[in-house]
Length: 215
Image (tube, rainbow, N blue to C red; front, side, top):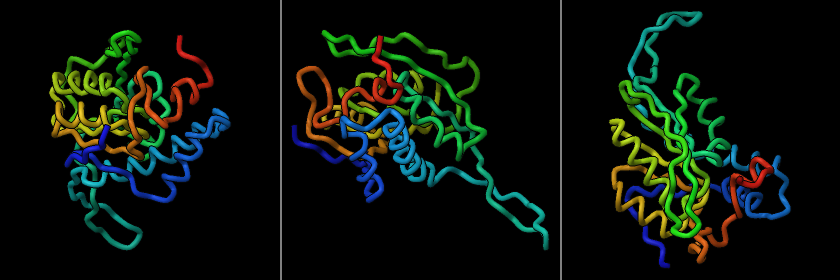
């Protein structure tokens, strides 16, 4: 499938990103090495995805004088898609320590390749202003679309998707269904195989990050 570039797609162009992706693709990388590479890549994605968060000016006192300084002026939600998305949470929390973390869980029906919800605990109160959906792999786009639809129903106005690898099929599905959602991706791979896995890919991100095959 020919890759199409969409206005909402932001590909990470960085030597450190390519070096970390090499670690992820290598079948001989240990779970520790795999998690470390995801952390580094997510840090790079976070810097891009948070670049334009709204600020307000507040007065503070330095050791020498008073001055105005920027302070984040929005409520932020971090939304990992279980299970693999959990491996991407820490870099965002380190830079957004007051962010809320909400979890969404889907598994893929191996016959239809469609997502099946098994965990959905978004709160009934007012939605966050900005949400960051985390999933290392954007394959068919089914789980991503389900998560984005949930957040839209909750009332979130600004949503970003952060992923490590994406297939053209998944990018197309999400970009066309949710053109206002920014897709921050480290690498766009060639295609999906018949089983719905990204090629060349890196295998199952959840299995490799947590050293435990899915049940």
